[in-house]
Image 1 (spheres, one colour):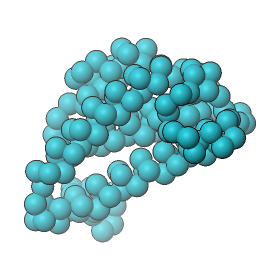
Image 2: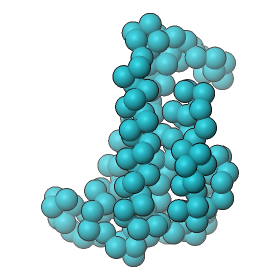
Image 3: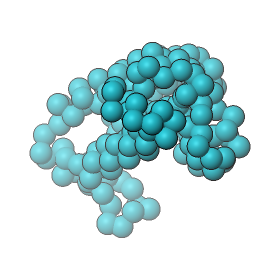
Image 4: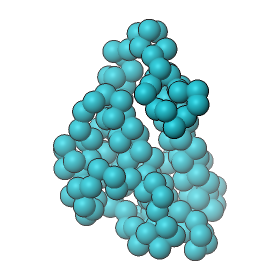
Length: 155
C-alpha cells in the first residue's frame, strides 16, 4: 500500500479531521510493536532498535498515536516509505516468531486485564491486535485511492 508514494503523499490528509497514510502506517506498526512486546515481556523494537530516531520521534514507548489529537496527527511527518516498511517488516517478523512459539494452551491462557470483563485470552488479544492493524491498513489504502484515484490497484 506504500510503494511509489512520496512524502507529500504520505502526509496528505483528505480533510483536516482525517489521518494521513503515513500516520496510519506508523500507528498500526507502533500499536503492534507495543502490544506484542507487552505480551512477550520484552522491550519494544521502537526503543530497543532505535526506530524512534529514524522517525525523528522521542524514545517514549507510549508514543504510539493512541489518543492523538487532530493537532498531533497534523503535526506528524512520515519518514520515507522504506523506513515505514522496514519498521513494519521488523515488527511483523518478531510477531511471526512469537506466533509460531505458541501452543493451543498458550492461546487459551486468560490475561490479567481486569478492566475487561470477561478477561480476554491471549488468542483473543492476538486477533484484536491483528484486526486493528488490518483496519488501519484498509484506511490507508482508501486514502491512497482518494489521493491517486485507482492507483491503489497497481501496488
